[in-house]
Image (cartoon, rainbow, N blue to C red):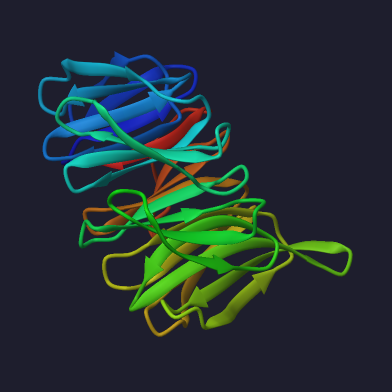
Length: 270
């Protein structure tokens, strides 16, 4: 792999891999993000910032436990805690905490807008998707069926992945949501929801316990692939990375395994 692959492995720790092999960088983490030559890894109530090239530790700060997602937004990094039901923003340069805001009930996902000024949070059991500004002020709350497990910007609007009760079955339902709040169900599968990720071309990837589905900006499914338990999807460098429980990290759509490890929880390609 030509670029550097960073993997948050719950057992091995933070790993960096390239053409020359791999190396241990820091303690285990559950969520990653990267920007401007820096990598952040959060886990066990701490977040550590590393230099991308040298792998040196730049700073270490305390955060609420249960950080399930990190997102770089402008000159700050936002951390979503499922334990604290909140999102925290800190300076990407120094690690100084700037602000904190509620984010639902056991929130699940965080997505920054490419413009660097807006943030989406999947509010989990509160059944809402939150649109926040860079100061974490709530601009709007969108009510959705069931538990909101994933959120991303999609085309000219947004998308939400929800766990919805349909009869006696729990289904994974993907909704397209306009900024005005108009909602449309795109697809529903009788599977447990896993993860959701927006694509640079305006599409999105939906992961469920059983398969992944790629959608284009026109809301049409481009292709589907079987995966037993997708944990995390990441768009990077013209490809998609998928962390699958117990299997490692795969590059999509080729399905080529790029990291072997049973405990890979998040991955970045920089």
